[in-house]
Length: 109
Image (cartoon, rainbow, N blue to C red; front, top):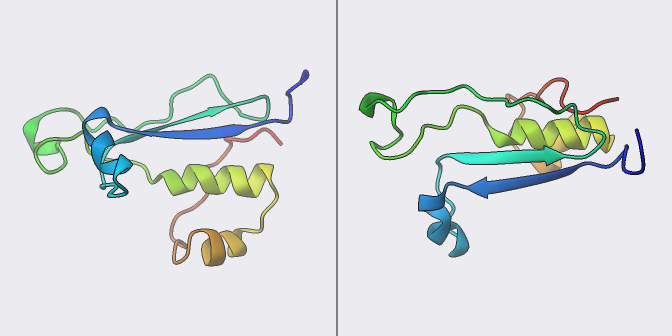
């Protein structure tokens, strides 16, 4: 795997139109992008469910509609890469998130 073969990192960025709200601590529900990098990441792909840009598909008639809960990505990294038990993720890290499954096959094991 090379020098950084076991490393992974997660970055989440808000959509540009929402950044002022995020900086004020008022993060809205909306479109975000997550980037995973590192040797432990099963990469080389884009994970997305494209909702389209037609007016009836936009969230609140202005933003790209969210189609994936980013907690599923974070849960996959914490569970499969860091070894945290899934019940602890649901109880302590992301309370009341039992219905959100860790995204499969993101981390190379």
